[in-house]
Amino acid sequence: MKKISIKGTGSYVPKRVVPNSYFEKIMDTTDKWIISRTGIESRRMIEPGQALTDLATPASERALEMAGLSPKKLDIIIVGTSSADMLSPSAACILQHRLGAKNAVAFDVNAACPGFIYGLAVAQKFMQDGSYHHALVVGGEVISNRIDFKDRSTCVLFGDGAGAIVLEHSNGNRDGEILAIQLNSDGDLWNLLHVPGGGSRNPPSYQMLDAGLHYVKMRGNEVFKYAIRTMVDAARNVMKSKRITIKDIDWLIPHQANMRIMEEVANRLEIPMDKVIVTAHKYGNTSAASIPTALDEAVRSGKIQRGDLVLANSFGAGFTWAAALFRY
Ligand code: UT7
Image (cartoon, rainbow, N blue to C red):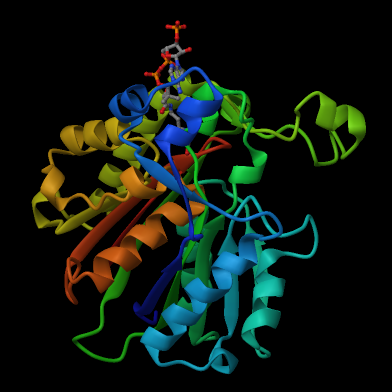
């Protein structure tokens, strides 16, 4: 089977910074509460009229530029998202059009926050047998227009963004390698975190909007507990599959949901926080975008270097959870 390596990374977040003080003005909350319960200080949100591919396109262009690859060379584009520009077609097809990636097959993967790792797994399968040579995998989300700005337990958490990677077949020692990926789902837990409206069960209507069914509904406390347990399990399983121990890991990139979740995951895995990549304080929870955005920032700042062993893990609505192990 062919080895697959990451040739380029890119990310893009909207320009509009929304600090905690914004929420202090519109609801009963405080900067102190938000920071102490989540670690989030600010997040980025789109301007009205913007949509997911307005973020995914510049993120992808940056990844392609780093990889030195023309979009026409892409064989496959996968976007992990639950907030495509429209219900149909996929964000991946719109991204393909915007990039001019004429020769790619393009589709979305909806696995909520682990959508990027799910997309990576699909790309890996398509590339391993050698039939596809170049892949673009994006994790992106626009959640700011699906949160209820009257619900203080959800609206302070989320932000918008997109991250992308370009994958190629590895052709040398200096290339990294995707080593292992673990995907998991438990549909019995679907109602802990969901957006009930806008699909075929509660189709768009004035009644649906009046009832606020288009907003994120979350049982935060329960999600919190499952998040820690599942992220730790996924990380342990993916390491075990390659007989790698936590001491070998150079960097952990956890889903950037909440600082307390990340700290507890690091604590249980026994990895020090100075090996954990954190962006939640400035971007909040950007769902499927959180891992590729954090990866790109860590690569561009020089934290993550060629050859480093990286463990990424995530959880989200579904319930879905996943982990990826790769040498950058
Ligand atoms: O990508 C997956 C997405 N989901 C997550 O990662 C979320 C996981 N869950 C969490 O991060 C946490 O459960 C939250 C941050 C959502 C909530 O934190 P918590 O420490 O679990 O708070 P809680 O839900 O137990 O609520 C404690 C109190 C409640 O007040 P009472 O009932 O004790 O009077 C809430 O109403 O905190 C209140 N509260 C707030 N107070 C001020 C909830 N949100 C806020 C707020 N400001 N923004």
